[in-house]
Image 1: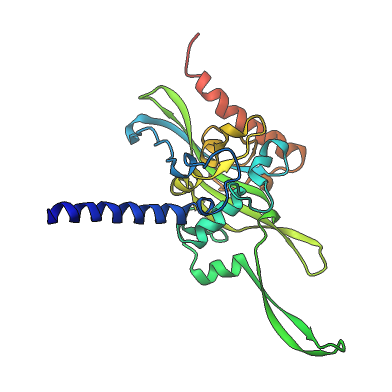
Image 2: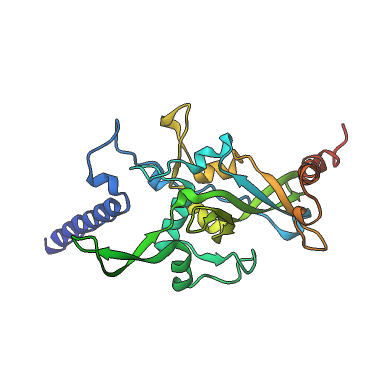
Length: 285
């Protein structure tokens, strides 16, 4: 009798704790429902695992770096909304929130793109927060002192995203495939007068680690909002538009180091076409 009562209380306790944790993870459960039903599928979604890959099966590979311009129409689902909504945040907001909550590790983008140097909390704070001082005035308009201000990074200032990926041929499956290794937001910097001074990478995120986070964040579907994709789907299905700005080479240089203007654009297209045509050259028709 005592054991049955104890088991019943234990089950009630576990379910109550689980419900509280789920409510904390999905804040919208504690607020009025903004829709037809409570969305449960996306917060519980897990990324589709990678196809098993052995080193012996990779007969060819090439590493390339791409730039995703969020101002292009095809990439705008990654940029909007500018301000987070109840069930919807832009890609940069999702990454920054995950880094702040220590769900993801941010790597120093100024040193390299090999995920070698994790950013310390102090370094990360320097990137994501701007500290300044402003004058304080009394009722007569006289300056009586100064106070410190703290301004969070505005994700809408990120207009480009770099991705690092590896294309390879898997002889076991006889397919050309690609895996994204890293993702890096680039922010536009302005001086105190509002003059554009250049672009600066924020940090690198190791993409395989980020997939669990991206698989729980939705991307807006303009054709059917009942069938929204996640950011993980968006990247794995390669729905974004981009251009190549670097490929593996003996000089470790970018395309912009030896070509400019139209020549750089044509060189980027040449690298892209080589990747697309490589698989075709392996077959006879």
